[in-house]
Length: 257
Length: 323
Image 1 (cartoon, rainbow over the protein chains, first blue to last red):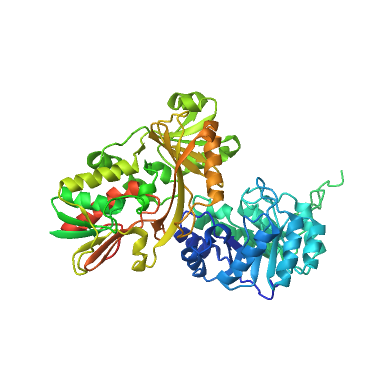
Image 2 (cartoon, rainbow over the protein chains, first blue to last red; image 1 turned 30 degrees about the horizontal axis):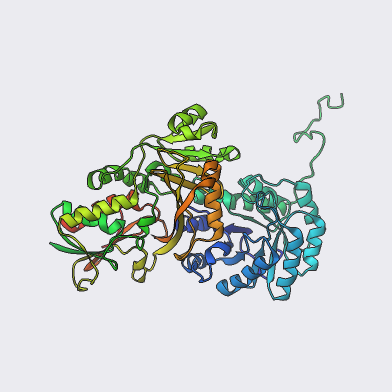
């Protein structure tokens, strides 16, 4: 098990806390998912007066690791300020660093991301950068001091699944010692299972559960899929073959024709 | 039986009306002698749309919300029963499908049918959902009407609180979070626009994965545009982002909203319990009726009925979690 800044997670699921029909349903979904990490956004709720306290204390009551994020930040400065606020509110060095570069696709601005990561690492943060599957950006993030990488599967909230399997596979092969999390784009349990089959260390998702008709039931489905994918990854899956290979004996049949 | 009701927002006024209508005697208290913007119901949309709310709300919201239109008609008048229209911009068609799956009581409309209902939206949307049985009202007119009727029955709003040992129904909304510790605020921001170029006959919900909004016609070219839902107790000011999002959505619904005048900006925090369902709680000698969340006008009649049932007959109800 790869550790996230020294922490071994109980389960490889990080679940977002936005967009649920109610805090009660959010809590039900967490219970059903056995998620070990809750991500929480501060940008909008915080205001100047920490007016989001009521909601944040509900998140604290979930009893899981809290990973505050900088969702909705478009510049290095905004992201850094939000990270500092998050550290104060949740008393954790963890920060999911998100610097958005494009309003429509919510695609990360990887240049600003690397810059913000450098600043935050110097400020003592343990940074979880939300990035693309770009290998060079990944290297620069590690060089900046990040010890975790969170490449996207697909754009945030799109539910498209893993759009660039080969890219994600390359990252895994290239960074065997770094904890990797597929963050964003998961729509179905099969997507989450696939991420785990690739040997990723965790999956971070939100909309797929929060916007399901029955969030708790979908949370449970995700948990099962993630467990299946993780178990499969450690079971040394077979190599795909170009030809059919009969699993029953063929002796006595004219198989060489 | 003399009962003190604290809070003259939608909850307090409905309870006062319900008890008075059943022959009870009430005294009504608030920190202000006149109803207005210190109550978050003053800023409400006034949609009586139980089916649409069922998209994200628990089942009782739909069932209990079905009582609302008749109750308001009987006690305040001014209910428009023109249904609700749910639309999505082209690329958000999936949202419309999901909404239809998650709700009952709608039928799908094509472009012509939308234009028949709302001629100003002709050629703007290819498909939509129509909830024919739903209704809307003007929240301020309704609150004023309840308040005037109470006045005619000798109930005026008093500002000096009753003696603590008095039999009391506490309808203070978010202010009651000093006692109801699981009550939280959910910030809402809304605008009132004047746009004589557009005529609409019913509330329109514009679905969007990130910024769902609704627009409720108030008549005479006036519209209520709402509302954000932010987990925050802040009730001071609207943010630029919320303003941008609300106005962009209105503009997407109809470009003429670009020329609208902004008459009012409303900001407040809705009182909500963790499941976003209302509660009736008895902590002698006080009964609390609270947590209407975004369903003030939709659920206050049912909560008022259940509260009155409890006061008169001691009947417990499904919303009662402490007795």
